[in-house]
Length: 252
Image (tube, rainbow, N blue to C red; front, side, top):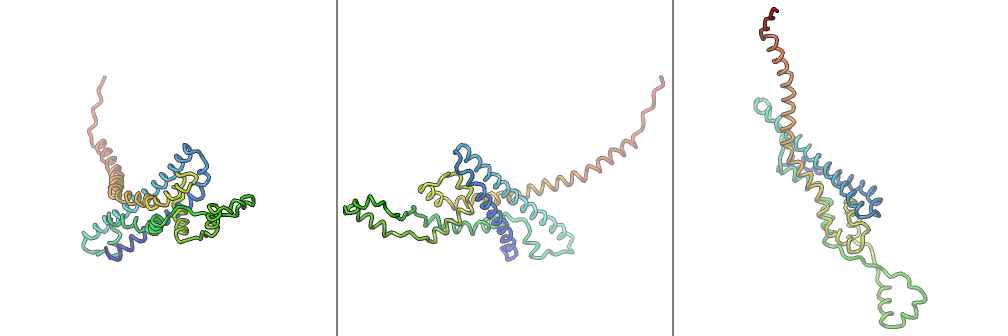
């Protein structure tokens, strides 16, 4: 793939990444109000939100595919005349199935890299021991209790790179958290492990939509041709009526 085609794929990928950011922001605003609902209500509502986002990504992909097909037809018609030679930048805008897949991969790459890192490094939560009540101080004199409490009190929990990665991933994929409801430790770890798969869903839908570009372009061309032919058919029909001999009137 040439530099011009790669640049075109990068631009399309950035547009998809912008949609991904908007999806995460919308989820941050709406999903927290749904997490506390019963699963029978929460999960269908979250599903509708994700399906609506999927339709948007599919339409974006199919629109780009149709646009690239139209550009290819235009350049092909100009090339047949022999008086116009498309530039590399114009040729890069032609339809290519690989370009649609590459654009989706580039659009999800920033999220996917962080999600894969989180998936590989996520561990169960560790909790630091807070101050124990005074009435329990007498029990700490027993070795089997006091030694464990002393070890827990010396244990410190600090933010790591994995924690920051978790913050980024959940901000961008927050609507999917709605399926888990109130995150327990086990559910939180499971979400971290599955986050790369969640990150790939919408970009994959956009890539599939791009593959429908040729069929969508064909329908558009057919509709334009039918619209052009309707006036011609009407004119022909009117002309036949004027030319057709009139039947003689019968005398009663």
